[in-house]
Length: 145
View 1: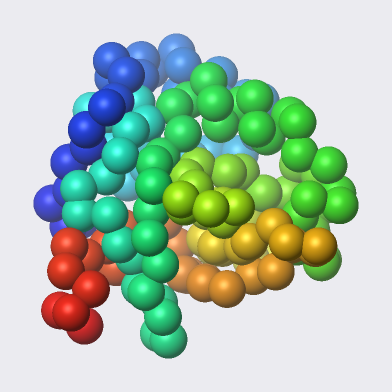
View 2 (view 1 turned 180 degrees about the vertical axis):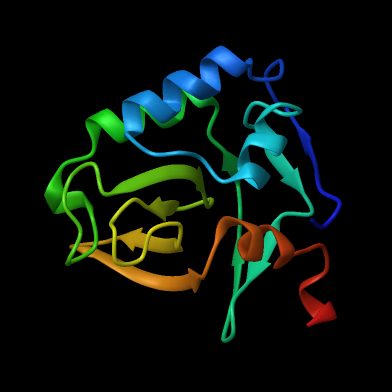
């Protein structure tokens, strides 16, 4: 995993908080995600850009465990990309605008990370095959690509 740190984070998530999130979502969290949340419970990542095969995207902040649960329970079908239903995406971070980073909980693409933006409808812009590949794609300097 790339070395990332966070600023403006909450105290580390406890094992019970992580287990509760897994219970609420009905899915096991990726080990890399658990590792980050056991050190930083949300906050602004440093570095704060992530790239896929085509583009570079900003990350404003990761949600805390409690914010993930709140967002997961509040999302409606119309605020999700086409093909996703409520409870099929677990949001964990957002950009400075209306973009959201989420992990798919669907069987056919479980664990895939999607970056989508809410305009008139939710549109997917970035895709990573796993949370680990997402974290490994975080870069400091946009010019380093």
